Length: 76
Image (cartoon, rainbow, N blue to C red; front, side):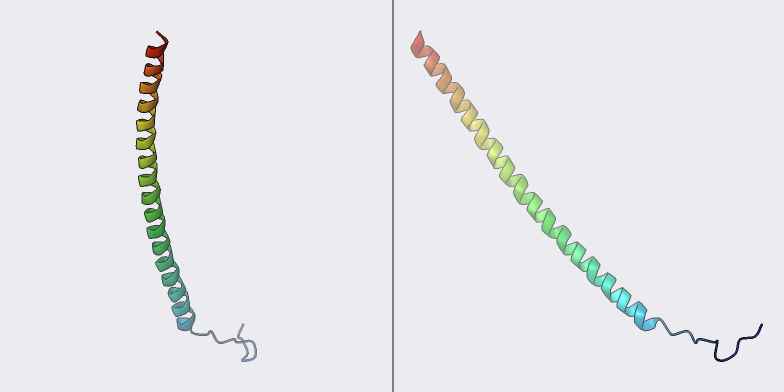
């Protein structure tokens, strides 16, 4: 069956649409990379803070053990 000109719809070129999609995709990837870098930096800061807290906790635990031993020595 042959189509009449009234039924025929010309296809539009998609180059403009593709460029917009590529631009959005590029922008999204750039944003994702920045978010990833920010998360890595936050993770590193939290890791270092956690390590410092654990070191301080260990020092306090040793100090508490020494004080406990002193208290036991005074009771004797």
